[in-house]
Image (cartoon, rainbow, N blue to C red; front, side, top):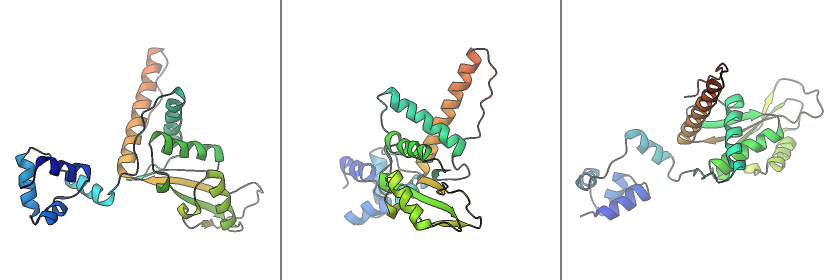
Length: 212
């Protein structure tokens, strides 16, 4: 017999599957499902089950905003993604830019607002064929305070760099479908709020988005 407390702990707390729980107790997944139904415990959808198998530990935990600075950072991060972010994706939350300050703000947004585990950030560097990619990777690692181990292999373009101060283009990303969904929802709410404010002042509402 499986108790309700044990099922809640294993299924919801540890996010284990029916098969995993059953194997531990010599039961079939169907038997575990019987006890869950008996206690009125809701089971995951197929898509949720796939998500938990791919993400045994959540990579982010949304922080409660307690200051004006944090609320401002949230708004800035959303606008950065709206303008510079990767749009055609099902799971990647990322921006690509050359500006160090913008990249630092994006990183702060991911870590301080979304609570993304810093070890889950991935960085990709794009440079021209006549540049020292490894040296520039070290530069960006130090400037962004992100370990070299979290950098992908450098991508080289066919262009020739003629600007002495050009240090490549950087993409900072976190891969998580729920993270992307929450960001898009926040952005939608921000735009609707701004549009509402414009209507109240009698100005034309011009903010539109295809964020979904």
